[in-house]
Length: 176
Ligand code: GDP
Ligand code: MG
Image 1: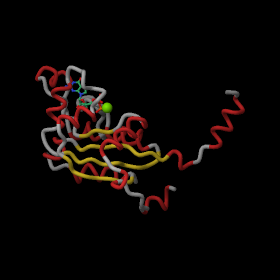
Image 2: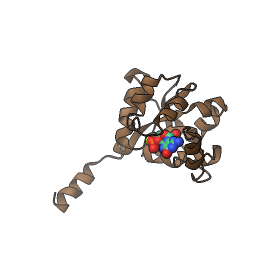
Image 3: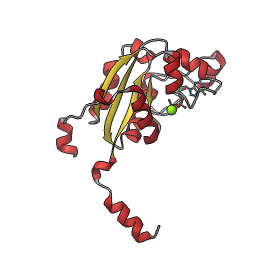
Image 4: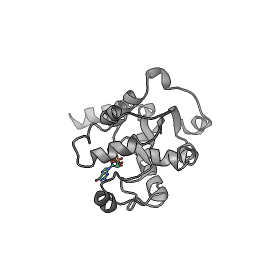
């Protein structure tokens, strides 16, 4: 594509096109540690919009669908045991570049090295070294979609169309 056409393509993009939805799960460790409210408020405070939410105790079959990219990995069995050990709170969260912004708030996968200030860095300290020696999944409080494509698939898996809501928040008045 020529530079000029590329520019035209960029120009055609509307600001609303940057608004994304992402899937967040408060994992069984977060629910059992009574952290639901505290964790949800982190997303609310930055102005992200919760457009769907429910509590679900998933089955091993559903875990295999959600973690389809990981089913053949050595840690999968322990991951399934962890994610099916109790109910999770599932949310679809909407905002500007929501996938990237939510991953920033959540932090990297291993709590030991996740920066302080992120959810995984602030609420846990499990390490790969320890969990691999124990043969358990890394307890990292929360799941968030890794890419916009993953987010679309995951939201479709977790929510029906009529469970996702469009509404205005006061943040919209300042942000949009
Ligand atoms: P995430 O996107 O940051 O949640 O990380 P992944 O998609 O790579 O992995 C999914 C989940 O599997 C993680 O959140 C951890 O709970 C677990 N997990 C990932 N990698 C490992 C690992 O190397 N060892 C163990 N024990 N658990 C892991
Ligand atoms: Mg992932």
